[in-house]
Image (tube, rainbow, N blue to C red):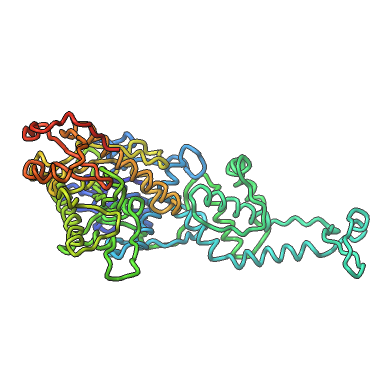
Length: 556
């Protein structure tokens, strides 16, 4: 098994040894740079390769596994990782990675970037071909879905056989009947004259126990309607150890082709070596050349609310704010409580698919400010037409002509612990980026701030295809609260924001603003509960004429 990382350079001979088709890398002299993310199986050379996203590169030239990209490429799996707990992360990673690409294909109209020839079946006859854990899981799932009718028939047949050759003498002696309304005795428990060893049932128990384990471990969302005993917990761990010998003890007890295939799958799972005769000449792969688009959709699904179609098709929707008239498309947008009061404002985000030590460039920053200004203008256009997106969205204060603060954020994927697929570990990364026309005007439409965050890429990968809607909604709620809290803490810290905030408590607020409009323009705003807020920049001397020993204000 080979592990390559997108964007890394490898000797061209190594790449040619793995890939029959050069479309997965870009040759530059004696080296080639991997340009795809995905899974590749070269059957003619008996090689499997995972093409990992570039976020798997750590800092200092090492991968997140503590190996160089070349050492990771040459990583050899000495034994199967199907059973051991310490390899759970690797099993989950292969499943989530594949599932995320299928989820993208399902959600996105831009499926042209997804290249695939991957099939779902293993010809489960043992031989000398390598197979991946992903192949095995897909084979179990596909076999179960394809042969549900056959399994149901076997269950019916077993029940019928159990009711034949009844030992009525033992039943009369040991079983108490219940009586019908006509007084006839009815027996519901039967004893057979001869104990029949059902090897087919043993095989089905093994199969369903393995499938149940895979279903639980990887959230495959299979509904197993088996009436057979399911081996779980410690007993299943023991079965992983002795299952191969138990399986081979019933190897020649049946002749049905479907049961033989089921036997082969179970044998593959219990085997300590990952080899199988696949009977496929064509290479199999599923890959993406523009993984930033997939990452953007992954973040959008777990961060942003789904588009809500208004009953009135003429009314604006979130979709109108995401797809701009100038052709620009926002990565992420949602409405949430504003920084200054209980009104709502749109939070605007841009996902960044970078290596872990990189930050958004000046170009990316400029684009983000343009996105934010487009959203502000969209809402102002509604206001000018005596409309609004909804009653609680508030961008401009009519009395002071001050503009509400528009929260913006960048979000980066990163991996600190390659075994952590459960925690988001959302944290701030880098400095707050700001843009303004007038430095001392906080409540001006051109004054914008962008916070930067990093999030555990493996959590995003898992959540994209595995989290339930309720869990996603819970995560969104927590993220929104965190973003707002961090913005508030930023503005409440004058050392970071460079602003001090004051609350003007005079009764004649409107008159005060009108008489000092030129000085206060862009520096004040009235909240929905009619509190005048004044923001004084550290370099602003013009506000010294006012008594700003007024009550200090802190956003809450």
